[in-house]
Amino acid sequence: MFFPASKVITFLITPSNLLIFLSLAGILLLAATRRRRTGVTLALTGTLGLLLAGFGPASEIALLPLEQRFPAFDAEGPAPTGIIMLGGAIETGLSEVRDQVVVNDAGERPIYFADLARRFPQARLVFSGGSGFIGGGVSEADIVSRHADVIGVPRSRMILENRSRNTRENAIFSADLVHPKPGERWLLITSAWHMPRAVGCFRQTGFTVEAVPVDYRTKGWGDVLHVHGFASDGLLQLDLAAKEWIGLVAYRLAGYIPDWLPGPDSPSPSGSASR
Image (cartoon, helix red, strand yellow):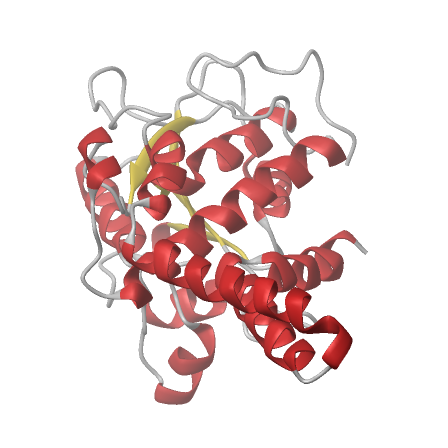
């Protein structure tokens, strides 16, 4: 039930949706004589919220603690045993229909996956990405399997995990596939804003990974004064940040991550999590 419930709850309380619902509820209540004051309050709250969230720096303020949590990847040290890229960058429906790789705003993930695969030719390569849709569908791993050469990753080197529907399952199923051993160096590629939850999930399975954050949406703490030229940009980024913070809270309450905001120095659990 966790997977479908998370989709429904996230849809309802994502900032842009919530503010639109408030505005619509306010407009509807304006038609009721005894509820006009409540209607005005809701309509103004929703409308002003959309304006402030869209044009103001709320999205940067929400994203920065996530994106700054892990430092940029440092290639110094021993060559990695393996490199894991999490799904979320490929539009599976469009890719399936158009018979080519169609990426979304997280398209940096496969770019850096291919780059690290080239730099470390002996590393094992894992792509972890199933279908994020309720009821299933074509998986990202299936798309990557057909078009690996297009994104610059040799298909012959890749281990594909196509069952996962969320970040927790990325970690569990990847660990089941590669059976990591103590002392091995495994790199994890995902978006910077998603890295705390992703690393937390891997730690909770007993799988130690080193963060390779990509797909940044902020330039640094100076962005707290940023003003958006288009409200749609601010709302899109705020929705992204809100979903991730909601995910962190839900995963912590469910016991899927060891602490509220996993970081480079966060403690690992004393034992592997129950699967």
